[in-house]
Image 1 (cartoon, rainbow, N blue to C red):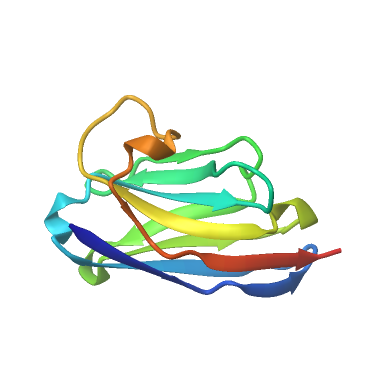
Image 2 (image 1 turned 90 degrees about the horizontal axis):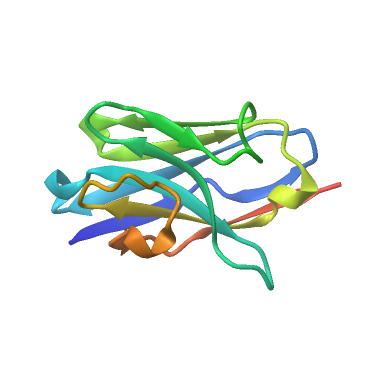
Length: 125
C-alpha cells in the first residue's frame, strides 16, 4: 500500500496560481500512474491530470489543459500540480491517487488503488 499526503491548497483570487504537492510513502515502488482528481460540492469526483511515474507521460482533462501542469520528483516520491489562471469553477477538494497497474485509461477513479485525504482549493471571483 502507498500512503499519500496532499498539501498546498488554499484560497486564491481568480487568475492566480497555486501549487499542490502529493508526498508518497510506503510501498512506493508500486507507483505506476499517479493522478489528481477533484470533487466540488454536490458533484462527482472528476479527473484532472495524470502522470506515468517511470516515463513521465502526462494526460490532462480538457478543462485544465494549458493552465495546469503535472510533474513528479522521483527522488522525493512527490507529485505536483501547478495551477495557473485559476477560475472559480476550479474550486474543489483536490485528491491525489496512485494506480499500481497498467490500464489504457487514466481518468477512471475506480481504477486507482490509493488515495490521499484531499486538500481544499477555493478560487474567489
